[in-house]
Amino acid sequence: MSGEDLVREHWGLARHAAAKVARRGRDFDDAFSDALLGLWVAVLTHRPDRGRFGAHAGMCITRAMIDGVRHRKGRLGTARHRALSGMRSLDEVLARGGC
Image (cartoon, rainbow, N blue to C red):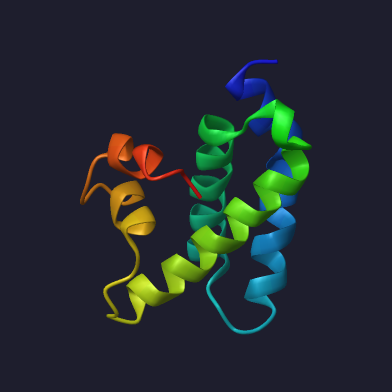
């Protein structure tokens, strides 16, 4: 299955996670953007021999949304979020093990 197919299949997971966070007062668009970044990292870093993609994607999505909150609150955030927001290379994030 291609990366695009995995994103299409698990789009709802990212949307659900963003909606859950938005109910707590966070902007849905920001949360959904972070969730999609996490989903894409999951696509790039998933190893089928280590478990189901959905479980891996859920973890990556959650971490990306937490990093997004930290980043927007003026904290440094993590290398993972800085890389995804264009401040560092994605290769560096993947070299460190992804999400």
